[in-house]
Length: 218
Ligand code: C5P
Image (cartoon, rainbow, N blue to C red):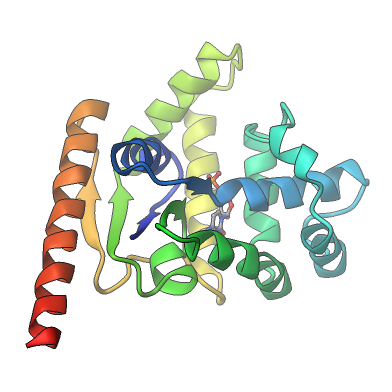
């Protein structure tokens, strides 16, 4: 069983993906971390995330230790991740490890931007998790404030909108809802309600997959 969870920044997709992984006993991959580690590697080597060759080199030689770096989840690094992720060779370099993770026996939950469209187009269940830009910025602002980051709400909203535009506007694997993904708008939902709704949508997708299997066997 493969569960694909896509959506823009701070939509709640990470929290939902982790909850689904725990509910169904599946391993979980936050694919954003691969792009964040790539962007961080470029920055640490003094390079420019806009430089395709430097970013591709970093993606091909990804240092697993960077996945635990304290700077991985920072706002500055998110912008770098979004810049490197628009380079087609970077996406190609990271594709195989995501497909291998998705294809492991028993299945997996992956969250990102192109899981349902590119990485696992045949996923059992696909969710596209979203919320209004303002709600997402308010969530991210609260998270950053809790970590002692004093950035104001307007700056956080501008960062989120810049990232949305870059992620949706790139030519390779842009952020978009797969045709067969269920839409989950979390703008007015708390965490528990959003997770319950996600579980209900996955259950529907599983029931549909079983009924298709049954029809094929007849
Ligand atoms: O999910 P997260 O916000 O950590 O992702 C950081 C950046 O990595 C995104 O803004 C996006 O540009 C990129 N990304 C991507 N494809 C994915 C996951 C993340 O392009 N599957």
